[in-house]
Length: 349
Length: 248
Image 1: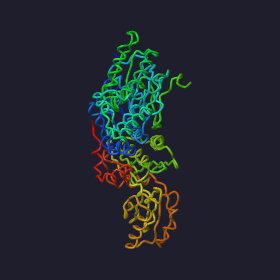
Image 2: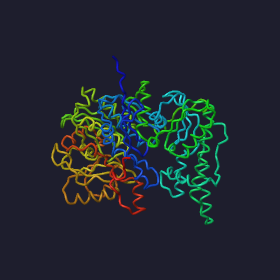
Image 3: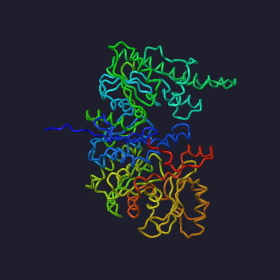
């Protein structure tokens, strides 16, 4: 009698300002997840300071490793692989997770898996429902805004990308102008729901055939509007400003993503990344997809809100797929701050 | 007691195996640029060559600083994870004490330092009181401008009798003219003494008390520039670092 053995992965994530560990079973079930956030520290500076982030990561790394195991009721004997985000991200921050995971692998003899952070964000969806391939993902965060085609669980290709700022970055920058501390996304989203799109900010690249984005023009238009009003002592409604900004971002994201869904006809549509927690964007994507012809409607997986931000559970989910393909790393694994998913061939023309 | 020690504090990557006081083996990569990719393979190599496994090591020792911030974190993370997982001791050793330990001359005042640019040094002063004992710190490890460091040395020297001063570490030779003004006999350590040797870290760790792996952190000796600026701007006091990190 053969028993199909459960695969448990202990995962590490430390690419930015959250230190996280998690035990994930079979790439689908989160048995434990610890997230130690440093937001309170970086709020002193209005944004993430890399050296400060690295210093905080090392303060908690051994404790949260033990906590992830104990909360999952597991010991090292129960773990089949150790996974870690090795890029993209802040190099000093990534190195804490990478050094810790490699040391753990050496000390226990458990194999090591290096995971791309973006692949992880997209695989947060796998923790909610089974993904049917091919799938298409809209990956939106503070560092990335990409449309990614998932051919199978480990082969991803970027089909659209931002040419300048990431969407989440634009939220933080306009947040600063409105006096909202980093991370600003949640507050702007809440304000947007109380205001109207009255400013008609530009929707850059919305008509272009490709799936690329640009948010720096929108950000500048927003800042200029605020500065101009300030100069003539005019007070603008912050709710309308937030609503107008968010409408411009969502219009472009939704329009281009829907066009990509029509072209690639994926079986599943996924959102990932911190901005995937934005209620305006979630509602809009749901309704846009519901209004597509029945035969073009993919299954939609929007990850749980707590799995949209950086966490190790998503890394454990992605690592399971790599485990199945025997894609292991060795002790020379290093942080790669500018790691990128491959671009689709049509993007390289 | 078998000790595995490592230093990633400077551009010399060093690992060693000690049996109590005795250095059994040491491996160095001088001018190494990628400690993250090389540290674990170098550890695996030294263990294999000496027919040891990681779980047979009784104590892990690591240079906790001062040094390159990123470098320090690679070594400290590795050592504390080993100790935490294998339930073994971990000991953090001052990088400067390890540099001082390379100068065995007794009776001399040893100034150990790492160039922190713009005439600043991470430095401290040590004396070898007895042969075979660990160098004793007499001017605490700190981040000093060369003028402050030299006046601290002058003050200490005036109260104590030393035949000479030895400068060990990096960046001191360019201060030769300034050091001459102390009006005392001095010399610079030899090249091989100016790099941090893991074997000496192991030797120092052999006699030291073990640290709690959860609490073992690099000794940066300096706050981040962002924190210094924030403190100046707001006048607010620094809170303990763990107050800024919350589990959610």
